[in-house]
Length: 255
Ligand SMILES: Nc1ncnc2c1ncn2[C@@H]1O[C@H](COP(=O)(O)OP(=O)(O)OP(=O)(O)O)[C@@H](O)[C@H]1O
Picture 1 (spheres, helix red, strand yellow):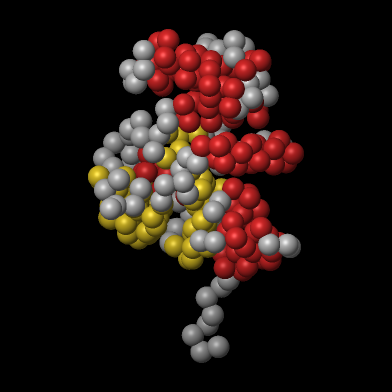
Picture 2 (cartoon, rainbow, N blue to C red):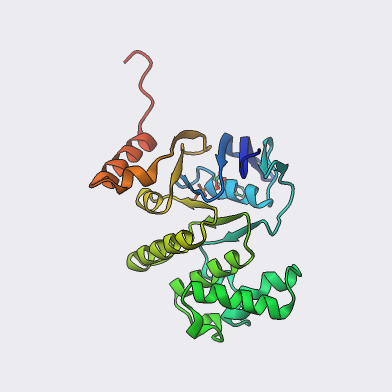
């Protein structure tokens, strides 16, 4: 039985007119159903690039990415993306219309069914009072809830989240992390979440993959985050441990 998502020794490069940039080098990891899998690493280590490749927007230069055993070759409704930017919504559509939009354009459901399903997800993110509002009237946190509802509403195999809370103030960010965990507790959907915040990785993830600076390579995986961080005071200890793993310099050979 294949894992839900297999990233197998993947190298990703960008080609510009005068150079080739290696964003990630031979990155491997597996995601299982209901995982809250976090990619954590410093700016430029290729986290967003990996997410785009899982989304089917980039093709690996080496290695392979598979979902349910099938190689990913293009974007698909089985992988929905939530981005950091607040402008990912369609400003000429209401909250409900934004959430139902992918269901309608992919013909997954007819219009009435799509409206009903979208309204369920609008309720799940507590925006029912704003269902008919246009998105420019919403706060940043509310816009991100709409984007999450829109992604979840397609009931994808995996929700790809690229620093979705990074542009929010600290309090709203914590509130959104809590709400995401509540949504997860209700539906146990699978999340692949990118962040460069260690604290956020520990709050959101049950597994955390640590990537080295540019080009990103796997440094370590922390796979028992839920158990460790639920023990008294150990979230802080785990944060220190991850910090040391991420920023440890290689020891000189004859030290
Ligand atoms: N379109 C592009 N063309 C050329 N190089 C790119 C492009 N997008 C990203 N890169 C380079 O690839 C590397 C990885 O970028 P990426 O955005 O994936 O990193 P990241 O870990 O998500 O960083 P951040 O946390 O800052 O978003 C960086 O060196 C970046 O400059």
